[in-house]
Length: 402
Image 1: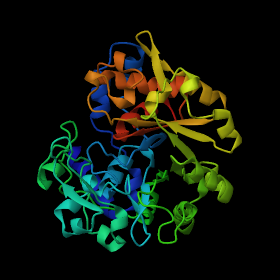
Image 2 (image 1 turned 90 degrees about the vertical axis):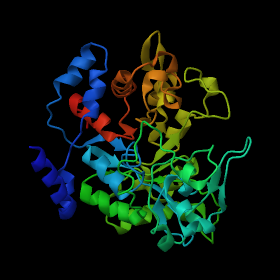
Image 3 (image 1 turned 90 degrees about the horizontal axis):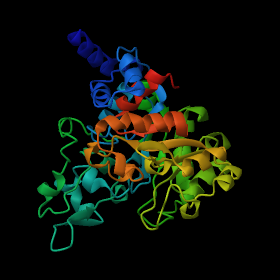
Image 4 (image 1 turned 120 degrees about the vertical axis):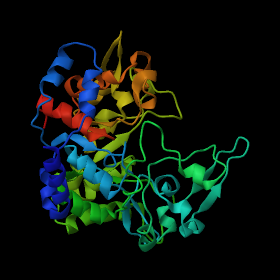
């Protein structure tokens, strides 16, 4: 059967629309189930291992499939969709000639592309500086430093930069061991926002573009923040994409409120992103530490709130449970989306930032599906971003989620 499967994938790469028919979850979900402690949840997940598997809106491809493919590239998007993601994300920023492109941040080209190894490094806002003493290595290379034509000559790479590096090659070759460069050399096709729309249409997935905060001062060459927010929506309208298929996102509440007012059909599904703050104390159980007023957000027309996973879960003894933050947001009538699974590496050391509220009881990759189950069944999230969508697609299929 394997030669037939590979032939089918190759044919679909040529045929285009047939891409929407391919769902292949691979071995990772089964590995995660095998790592679980014995119990009802493990039994239920193991029992559905034979499929069939369908595309699920609950499964959102975070930057495509960024755990193993260079993020926001054609290849990463293809991988995410093939793993059953029903929604895929293009983070949106702009070039020097005000063209919209897919990048996680306007100033991340040094760590997500090969720019430092090309002649375009000379155009970076700040070129590479090696580590010295307490000063880390780094560079500030922005999409706004380049025209679209120049941007399109770059190749994506796995997102990483070695802050201890003393030369460019070492800085660029810093992919964590739990990720891989296996696909990076032959992948890495960068995309414009408009190109991502056309690809996602072929793949049969819905859209969740995130309007990224500019690294440049706005207005930029006459373009205001509202102009920028409108440009993103206009590219969906120009492509004939119905508003019901688009979930525009932003960490900037003003962007969300702009869409609600200026583009109400798109604004109805606009997603306000929030995260565990690093500049002040936060406790998912203590309302006095929360910045969001959920009732006020709902009154302003916000329907979707997307907190980081760590804000939505807490500990109850040795169990994972919904946080008071999650309960209050749900009580206000907000639909919740969580981010991001499969971005922490192995969980045997507590899971890092994304599991900050439950670090003390996280000790195994087998607990990943415990977290997903609490988010889905007890918190009631309507979608879950993942750097490896197969993990979420498997769960959503097993549990009969949309």
